[in-house]
Image (cartoon, helix red, strand yellow):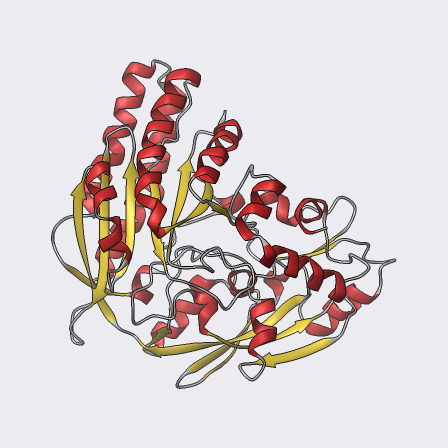
Length: 427
């Protein structure tokens, strides 16, 4: 679709556009989210216009990539009032599903939180407009996973670009576990790289810098290339061409730690959120070599989980000879109650994002890790987590998932937007 009326036509003509109808932005999430088995995919990338920029808001179509939005805002000296980690995603996808971010106390606590209004086509083909005067409706549409309507236009809160500084510290995983309570309460944004086979963690804290701090565009470009192009390509090639584990795996660990040493020093660097969030090498979904799987954990359980994750990786490798070849990345996520299916609804959380270019054995590894995650209060994210069960989702979301199921049935009684994957969890 390139205009809203085409979405209406798709929703109201099941003969031409059979069920299920699934909107897709960048197709960056769990690949099963958009599978339709004989149904219809709405590729929203055609609706990618920036409609209007104002002093405190921007209005865009839902198919616009975040990278393009951030670059355009930066040209006007503006940025979103919240951060995000995946610039390859579409704006609509970010609002309608889970996200990763590195927000501090002065931010909105996730890109979906800076939502001011949206326009949506419901499964019956009706067009609606909702803004902050209907917060209960926005709470149901945030994180709604494309199950109650097709979001086609949104307005987001913006501000003047704010430079920030990054401080980094290297420590053992045990040392990090002992500081989790302090890190969870820190005012800055928190991002942590975890290397379980080196027993290392690199902690970044991001804080506001002086207003006239210099933005270092070149620094972020090099960092983007090292972390998101050089490292994944190197470890993938090592895994492919060096069959001897005793030689290959130490090299992989060495490249991983060297990259962190190069990009996470004790030096203080100044840049803007907008500068970092336009990295061209951070690809996810079909365009990326890197596979990802994310679980959220309550902040009070994350220290225990770090020990369990390190030990699980080492035991699993010893038994099955499989390991993730990239560092896991954790994000401190604030409490987020403005979405019914928020993974951090009950309090601050840490999102642990597992990453690997090694796909042979990846799903088996994730299925076993899911049971470790469950023991520590792990919450799966429907569009970002793989290999979790309905029972695990029910346990993690509880009554909120039951409410969402009931709401979805009221809005979409014909299951117009329910594909096979979501039917496993939402019926």
